Length: 87
Image (cartoon, one colour):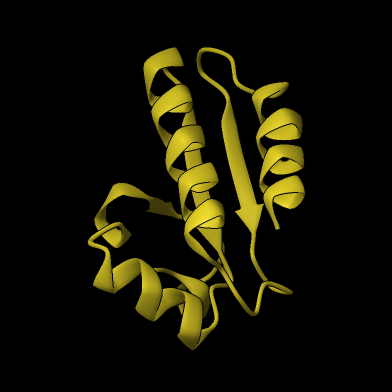
């Protein structure tokens, strides 16, 4: 799992630049541990610092609940249609 978080960070960091909009589609994500949360938080901080928007879409119930329990839902702007939006 550590490797997956590192790959995510490395690939998304390549896209972070002022004014950019990055959308992470979590359709196939069924599990997220602390390393995954750390990767997403790190990307949020990096993108925010660079003046870039990081959005998450298609969170399943389990992932949505995790982000809610950790008070992270409010950090992310939702993309896509209303059925996939984070509250």
